[in-house]
Length: 70
Image 1 (cartoon, rainbow, N blue to C red):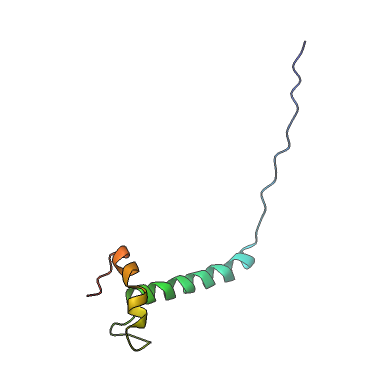
Image 2 (cartoon, rainbow, N blue to C red; image 1 turned 45 degrees about the vertical axis):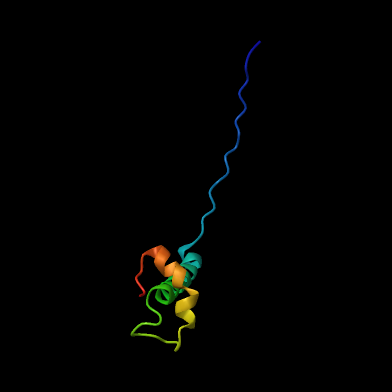
């Protein structure tokens, strides 16, 4: 009795051109910076929105990330 090995085809990796990834990467970077601004700096000296609404909404997130807000 002999053992016959059968070659299993391996899937080829999908190539995604940089032109397709770059706009999404820039968009996600801007979105991330905006989120970081609202969590870390909004309601401070550079406040865009008046009042304490944004501060209270992201208050626990600030403490979780170690950002002082008091």
